[in-house]
Length: 240
Image 1 (cartoon, helix red, strand yellow):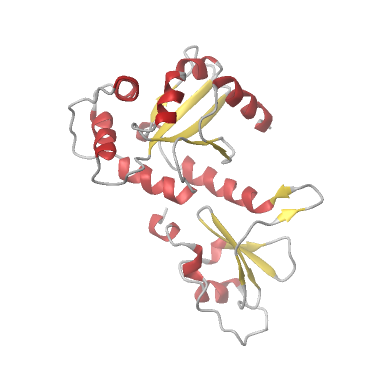
Image 2 (cartoon, helix red, strand yellow):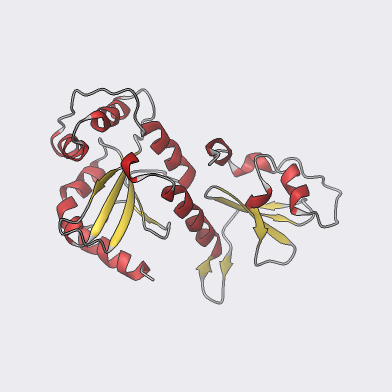
């Protein structure tokens, strides 16, 4: 996956369309005019004469003549469905699915029976992240497997980022994460490299704005902290 392409804000890829063109353009022609966009990012939209442009989880719409770009939510009023969010969720599924299991910290149900899986972008120093982890055993007991990715909100070269690196370098990451979140005990561990920067970049690509950021298997952003039973009920609602 070409990660750098997904970091372009939508506002950056609209500037080169020619204002006096009115004839429909091909997807290839549109891609040439929109910075950071490839042909595969351009698809048909439910609106006649309008394409959907999706770069990562950023979604916008462009007229077929390449003159107008529309940023906003597209709803189907017959169903009240947010079609833009559906497209975002599909993109998130692909991006979150690109992370290998050994590149995250996983807390699984003790009996091995997984009913639901969630991905959480977490910050060791985040209060609600700590509250969620206090209840991790209850969450697991409900059949929910938790995939943790790091998102130190303060960014690189900060104390929170250094804590995430040290936890990752620990011989037992699960125990180290629990101790760091619940007791403030951070291991004095170092290793050659960690995936914290990749987690952080991925969080930005999928639209993380705060922590914890909880994503369901279908890519939907459930929001922040939810009590275990509330979380389980929400996941049951989303189950196919």
